[in-house]
Length: 139
Image (cartoon, rainbow, N blue to C red; front, side, top):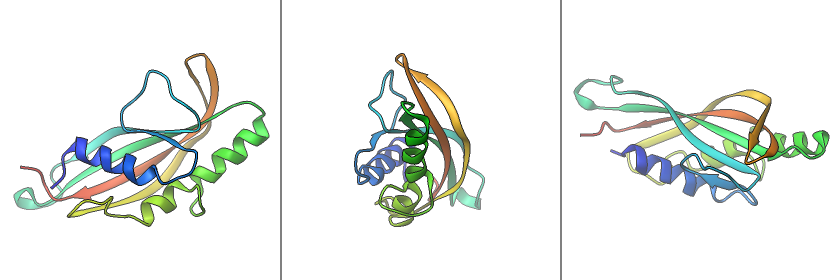
């Protein structure tokens, strides 16, 4: 059984293995780029009877500096693609339990590709990845 804070910490630890990616398990006021920001979205506590399983869904906002648009999109592509050294999906797939007991995680989809974000006065381009985490029900 893993608490929300424990899951967020585990996601950060799992993604910290990606070279040059700054991972935030809480929403920062400002971030270093490229960045992945872990944001809880929904929780389902009725997955199994008797508190058997919880399902958490997270948005991972992936942000890169806008700079030159073609270069920025190439950098973003490396983080949101399905495989490769900088792939967030690959990092989760390679460590589906996030280093936790009774936990299984996967990236289910990407959305909002090309969304423009302003953080601390810096233009960014990004996308959202949906991370689904199943864990034994909390007490």
